[in-house]
Amino acid sequence: MVQVLKEQVESAVKLYESVEDFQNIDKALKKIRNTFPDFSFQSTLVKVAVVNSLYNTNIFRTLDVAKHISEVVASDGINLEPEFVDKMSLMVLKSNGEDGKSKHYVSFTSIFAHNFLSEKFPIYNSFVTKMVAYHLHEEVKKYVSYTDFYHDFYMLMNSLDFKTTISDMHKYLWISGEYRKFLGLKPWEHPSQEINPDLKKIFLKKDDSIKNLLDDLVKDLYGPLFQESI
Image 1 (cartoon, one colour):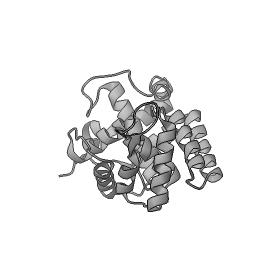
Image 2: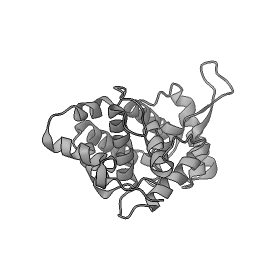
Image 3: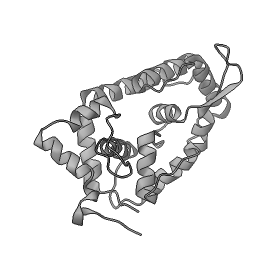
Image 4: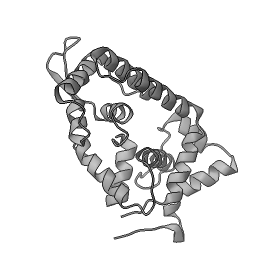
């Protein structure tokens, strides 16, 4: 197991806070949550449209997705177990001639759940899942469901020797994952420019303070700072 260090999480949070657009997105989502606290179809439609736009989650049937989530909440109430996110993520599309076609929108639904149901739900994306697997297993693991990912995420959280929040842990896993991919460090094999454009600007900065934060972000790779537990 590759231990997550306190300095890594703290550095990721500082890097995140240095991007004004990230702060504006967080404030906008909080405003939406406060303005539309219920899950009626209309309120859910606003939330779905905002998440889809701000996070570029490629939801093309926003009406179908909003109706599905609204119906699930109306039927089951708000359930704070990971299986509930899996249930919300399975959509049966009904518009634009795609009747009966099912889609799993796990990444989108995890963002929706994190922002509008409870922050206890970690956000699922390709960088975070790969980093969770890296820290726990030192290998690439394919998560077959949100529930599977959720349990591994909390296993990693419970391994920490310091306290942090779900949101800050997500910032570390996401930003460090982007930076490792940019450099071609484990668990990525080759450098890649296909990363978040706002983060890429940070990674290319010559500022010494930013460079120090980036060094701390991946410090487990360097000599005596590498920590591994069995």
